[in-house]
Length: 282
Ligand code: AMP
Ligand code: ZN
Ligand code: FE
Ligand code: FE
Image (tube, rainbow, N blue to C red; front, side, top):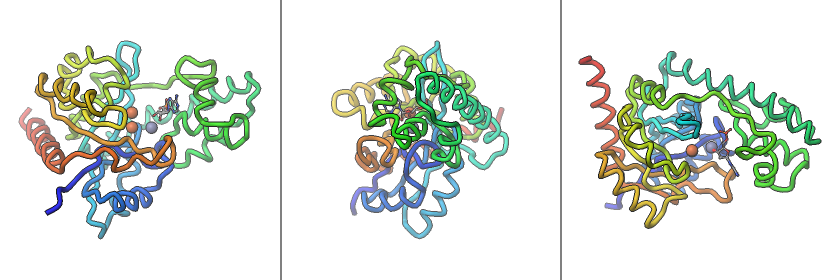
């Protein structure tokens, strides 16, 4: 039998991917994936529609989320696998971040105006649609209004970290993020550690309840992945992996280009059960 493969980091247009849940499933079929984890930024609204789109496809949807976390003034991303995405309290916690993301669009468009780039908050919201609004939507609005030539230009000149029109948004603390994910029965996993470049945070994150590290990622291949596999083993953390596909939002469609064997999914399921059982006994 062919080995079953999973891509454990995929976005939908409920955050900043250009793909609808239906497009995610279509691509997953094309790439012969058995399981796909939907991990939108600070949002779980895409999970239900993805499960629906996957009906009769033979593809398993793993409910996930990618939380934005501030730690020592650095932004890191924490994935949560098998979170209780239907729980009202869980969605309420995410809503605080989502509302702050909306607020920041008003500030960013005002700063852009000062730079001679006149786009309205509504131009951005029309593009972001449902779920989380993020900087790529601002870049797309700028492109649509022909204020820039490429999306990259928007980040390079205006909205990239520390550029003149960058505005931050509310983030979870590392401790809060772990608590929220664990309380919802989810498995907290550090996303793409190479991108954040703060490996020294890992012991503290583990103290707060971190259970895994995203070892395999579109930006972590070969020797880099090996390094993070060693780190995961050293700290007794699970290894995960996924493409971080944003549809057409990155230079190419990444889904299925980074995969892990289905046994990784089974380990995450076991860990989630363990977390849920531990919660019952406290
Ligand atoms: P936000 O969460 O709203 O701060 O936006 C972060 C998202 O913007 C990331 O997930 C990336 O997809 C995208 N992004 C950040 N920096 C860049 C960049 N320099 N070029 C293109 N996309 C970027
Ligand atoms: Zn994103
Ligand atoms: Fe991320
Ligand atoms: Fe991501």
